[in-house]
Length: 74
Image (spheres, helix red, strand yellow):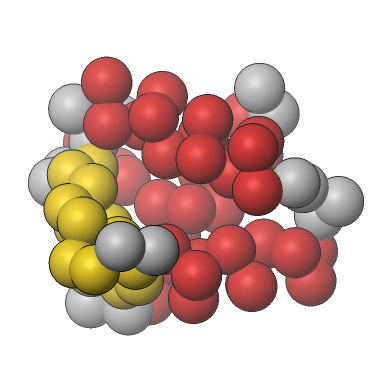
């Protein structure tokens, strides 16, 4: 997994005040990187397993991603 993508997700969450929908983050990443949805959700899983974010299902195909730890504490 590209470390830059993981950091970019955390930075995007900080820009959104600590929480954003998964599709909002994905659209931003697609503009900067050639990333598939599979790679994106793998990155979210890595960050969630490391305890940096929390992903909550809102609707069937919609998730809320919440930042649990500030990036400077990494």
